Image (cartoon, rainbow, N blue to C red; front, side, top):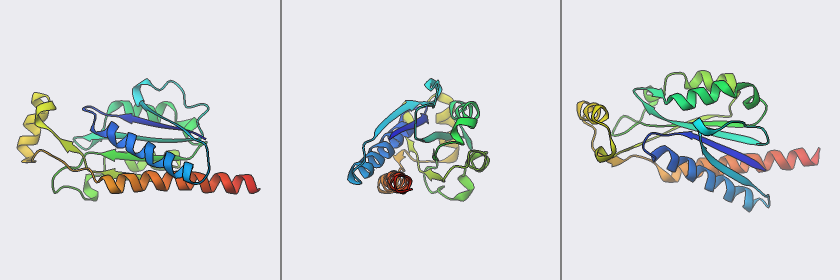
Length: 176
């Protein structure tokens, strides 16, 4: 089973989430006795989704919106993505802001348009040393402390859920 995990990230924290999801999904498939090849790619570098049996894609969220490469990925491959199982994730809430109001603009629409099996919102990471001036100013204005707000057990659990779901579907498809 070939799985694409496409990600749009600015400073690498969301890519780390994508890699964790890929590892957990692959482990679940292996545990189920299935072969898998999982590729994590920058969304802006994906030229085709042909040949993949499933796709997971996600984006960092800035100012309530996905990064442009994620939005373009969903738009460019919409037709193909409707034909395979798709899961979507976002990364961005930091501090005490992790609540439904932090859902990125347009995420629900993308999930609906693609028939995605779900959308997960994960916390992000703030490291002022890696931010550009405008980003540092925004973080200061919001009074958000540096820190890693990603919930690794939840991220790995979701990746495992994806792998188990694909394994179940494969077994059911083989039995038909």
